[in-house]
Amino acid sequence: MKVALFDDFQLGMVQEDTIYELGPLLFGKNPPGCCPMVELIRNYEQYQKIMERGIDSMPSRPLSEVRLRQPVSRPGKIVAAPVNYVSHMKEMNVHHTARGLGFFLKANSSLAGHGEPIVLPAAKAGRRFDHELELAFIIGKTAKKVKAKDAYSYIFGYTGLNDVTLRPDGENEEERCLRKSFDTFTPMGPWIVTSDEIDDPQSLQMELTVNGELRQKTSAREMICGIAELIEIYSHVMTLEPGDIITTGTPDGVSPVYPGDMVKISIDGIGSFSNPVELESPQKES
Ligand code: MN
Image (cartoon, rainbow, N blue to C red; front, side, top):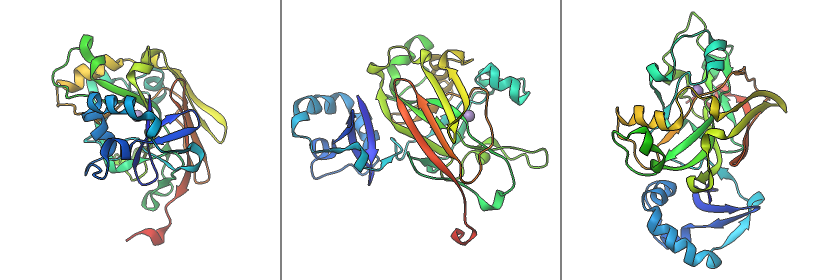
């Protein structure tokens, strides 16, 4: 199943060119106070039964008529793997990988959906900003000290993610979490494909283009720490909760983006999403 958030962060199910509105069926007149996707994930078994019975009564709209949003509007946390592909380790000329470095956190307010601009902060104009093609997954149930062999049962589904990054330049060496947490620096989507529909996530092929030109292309097979190992490492540090987003690192080919660019991520078996790049206008500062 493909589940999405659209328009005013309403919950939807995507089938081909149609989006079905899940909110009225699942929540009636009492929409959840939190992110509706997190509510769906937390009680998925119960809601799945309602969805199977009620699919014919769900209102639907053409997918082209709605605005897709980031598929989790407010996760508890966004956990990101640094240096998790050998090809990226070589291009960055670094010697530590996610196996030793572990993770960094991105602000959950940095999320953006399909079509939403990546806004480069005016205060950092002239610095280098890079795209980072990544496969991300969403935690389905509370995970604490999970062994890699059991890890896949904790995954709700998979999505694409662009870990947009302000690069350090020798003079400016901000922490990773600052450089990657500007508003709109985590485009994600276009939706979540539930884990039952992805036979082997480590075999997924993915690519990123800028203005139609191929910049990054990899198989998830090339990860240094695979998905299961990441869950083992991270869940031994912190409790992973339903709706948490884990993004798995980027391959080589990271390159700068500039205002006017269009960045597109495509992952086989998931889908595509794109984001234009803009420079923040100074008058927007408050
Ligand atoms: Mn990254």
